[in-house]
Image 1 (spheres, rainbow, N blue to C red):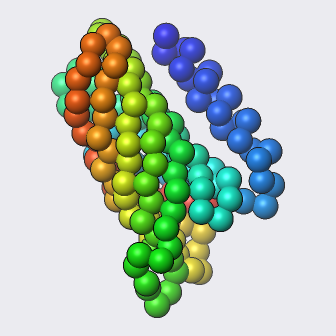
Image 2: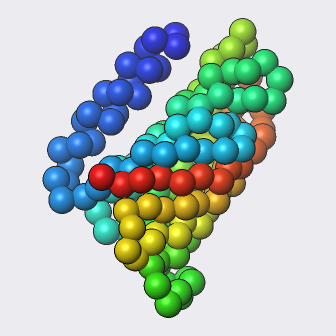
Length: 149
């Protein structure tokens, strides 16, 4: 099951690379629940895909993968330099462990996009509803940073 999800994650990254050649891909870290790698691919000026490959450190050291589609609103917060969009979206999440869980997640967060550097920093919270093998509700939350190239 882990191998299948890793293959799907890599397919996601490679398949989105042709959506808009003039947009950047960001790779960085997420710290919190879960902790790991964050990959963001812009698909337009206000939309992006976000992928997380991480470990859920609370308990059994489970592997966590999520993919979200995000919308960014730049008009909520005004800053003198850079951009500070409020973003929100939804996606899927799987936690691979002895009892693998698969579900949906919503996400809301803030990202500061630096004006003079290809870097963003973000803070987000994501309510999660697992549907497989049974229904349960929880939250993910993290801070992170990505470098865009």
